[in-house]
Length: 508
Image 1 (cartoon, rainbow, N blue to C red):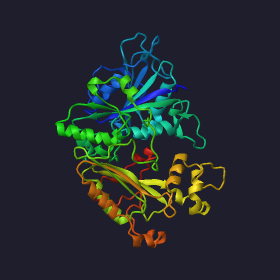
Image 2 (image 1 turned 30 degrees about the vertical axis):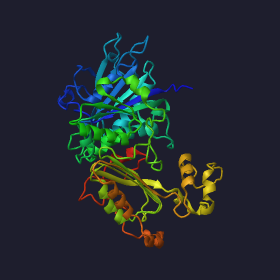
Image 3 (image 1 turned 180 degrees about the horizontal axis):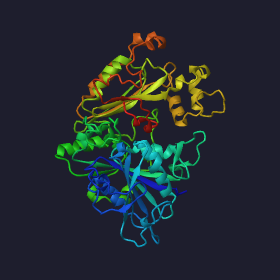
Image 4 (image 1 turned 60 degrees about the horizontal axis):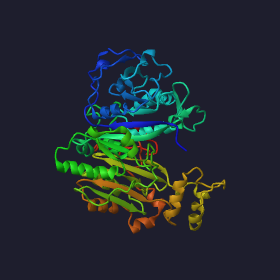
């Protein structure tokens, strides 16, 4: 049965210049919140990301929405809404509450409107909840809108937005009321009535590899989303590619070697994403090439397989993939020392960890360039309601059956895929606890990475001491709101849940 929900395409990327901060919005010539005006075709233009968003206007019935967050710290967001070619036999739609001047009765001239939004709190979450999500839901319900394209500000990561589209409830009016399933929540999420057709990331072939392996912060580039946003450019641009269903390559590499190495990294970060050159972009053809098993906005659980899409595991142009797995836990202090190997010559490291001093919870590690996050990823199944957990020698049978009719089942509500994976890999001693870290290196020695991580595992003697002793060890990862490396290495961050990227809006 065909899916009749309105398709949403997200267009992201750090390629090229950002919209000019010296435009009318900064000189006070735009009206206050709710106002609008027609914009000259070249105002705020010039970036490859905007060119890609422009290209989607060729598809009938497409609306393109962009929120410029350059002045968000002042509580001001500029919103741009554009209508492209009307659907066959129709006219451009009008959404509830829109200025009548926004509807152009004739066809052939794209409508382009800017609005200035003044927010009580200048933050990305407020922009999402107060405007982007409600507007997207209204557009998806508007007759004549056959596709909505969300052209993302560089500071807004597609993974976080997709999480919000799926989980944040938007009321029938203008506001959102909380997470899906929350007590008292009414209305629906955006994806109850729409679907993510694709996440398209634009890659600047000339600068992307340097951005993905550098230490520059978004603030240093003038792209931060708030005063305390200390994400690095590498964290954002790597995450954009990793979450993409399709890639558009803009510009040219400075030399053949850089081009080949960039391609090798992209092969490992987004192995299934089709690629096209910007000068050859056919939006409809690109969407048709997205494979059926693409993630399409699905945010992976921290306990899902870390290696996604069967990327090449052999070395190419000095770019290599290290897949580190182990069943015994890490020693907290030796792991703290070992993570330095993931910050030099490494494009990306991400994965699930078991630290002996915290035997009940999984930790999630994620690095890009010189930035690294370590955060809480929820409890291990082995730690859930130990008093009601079946004996280890019967667990293999019990976990394979995902029937939760037994009211004492401590795993009620756990994703069936995670239950099945735990059953297949259950160990009588470790349960479902394990280490799984995938590293994409461009200069680091894969053997050194493997050796450093393996050295951080408990020795046989330490393993024999047991959990009661482990819990008493000094733990640099134990204080979620006090980064153990903050004074020496400001790019290390804590308190991140990969299953809810919006929680990562406060960087440590």
